Image (cartoon, rainbow, N blue to C red; front, side, top):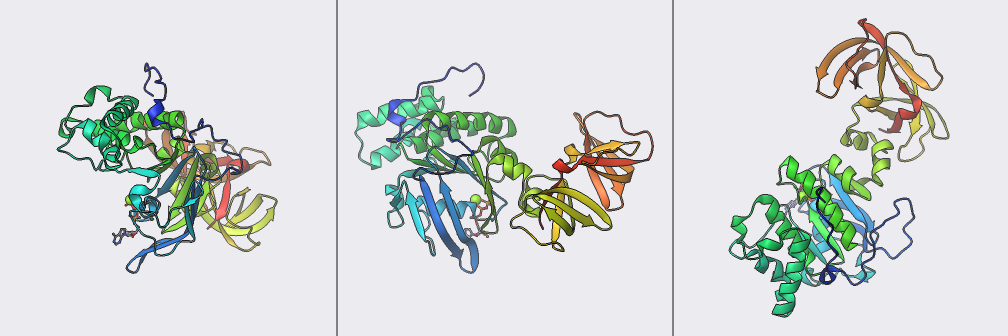
Length: 388
Ligand SMILES: Nc1ncnc2c1ncn2[C@@H]1O[C@H](COP(=O)(O)OP(=O)(O)OP(=O)(O)O)[C@@H](O)[C@H]1O
Ligand SMILES: [Mg+2]
């Protein structure tokens, strides 16, 4: 919620029957009945495989984000859940324990917010929000009350009679959100809802969406291709790649313990080096990159055997440079020549040329070693080792 705004009580008309306070213990195993279960979903358009055996579950009240690059199957997955697309093959599709695979879209207990709003431009804000209730046969009085509650929740209480074309992009997206909330779905599906908004508005709306999610206790399944948005908003992230799930985990694990080179690259790890696994002791991995041994923590998919090719990853902000060789058994150290530096305002991105290739270092103070020759070093605990 933007600063200076008082919290509204959750309007009774928007509470789902089984709404609960949306405090999800991110570390807790999912013991309760899942709100959503998609089991072994396969879907293809002609010979393009969009979903290749995907299984996804969401707990009640969870904020689950589907993250992935364009074409990875995110929208297809959402369309299967909502019923807008019939899967080629599916093991099971259950909402709150009920098999919905044969229930048409309009009768499923979930609604969708689309990137392009999908509003009726010729109708008023109020009529747009009430539409879903009207087709369900809700009386005019109740419709209006519930629509006004929903508009209050998205801070558009005063725009009830406006026409859609008289609204800004951000306001239109709020109307779309109110319209999706008003039937009191158990699950709200959001397909890149902030994609069309400018940066400032996106950030404001992220905060508002998180606030609404918390207040209503509803399960959100949220699509984005922005890793920053996913990290900010989610209880759990599912990272998709070419129709498959590459990693499903809490944001800190996706960020700090990527299972593969692909996940690390997608989550912005600047330095990725391939090498041969020499030893693995618990999660301590030694990797030979060219002729140099580096040590780090294994976070890959399955336990590999020595001799396997793996990837070493380290974030630029976890690296340091020094004039003299730093000492310490807990450090990886490489000699290198200081190369280009790019001034970024708050920090400096410097490249150090080492025997195993260029390494990108982020420096928060602009003091660099005076010599051209120096050392780049990082803690072994900050060194990720993962599947290639
Ligand atoms: N109606 C369709 N007909 C044919 N191919 C389709 C259709 N819809 C999607 N595809 C293909 O299926 C794959 C997955 O598409 P999908 O829309 O699910 O991806 P996405 O992850 O939502 O991508 P984006 O981030 O661009 O929205 C892509 O290769 C896409 O080209
Ligand atoms: Mg899409």
